[in-house]
Amino acid sequence: MYKKGTHALVDAIVDGLQDKKGRDIVVADLSGIDDTICTYFVIAHGGSPSQVQALAMSVGEKGRELCGARPLAVDGMRNGIWVALDYAEVIVHIFLPEERAFYDIEHLWEDAELTEIPDLDNGN
Image (cartoon, rainbow, N blue to C red):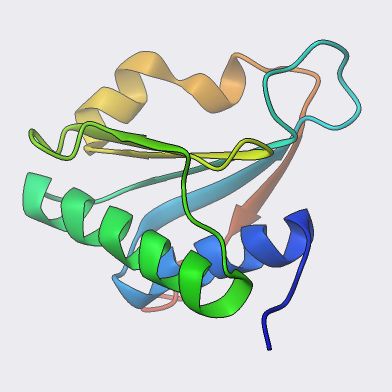
């Protein structure tokens, strides 16, 4: 039986990111902001293009396994610098650290409620 709903999908995405040691995971809740393209952004980074790709694949697997959800679109898998997975209500952004710092998308939405998820392996 699949868990349903946007919150369950966000939890599955975070689980997928943590499974492959995604770093500095942030969930941006955009629900209180008018005219946004989605309800949540989930943002993380990996240390190499292959890790970014592995994180994206893990997110896809967990979304299907735990929620029966598949992304409507996936962009960036070929280069592994910035992968975006679009689940309509949730958009996942997985970067290399340099790209994440440059675009700084979690801070573009100043009014969003940001939740930082601790890295599992070092207790942050």
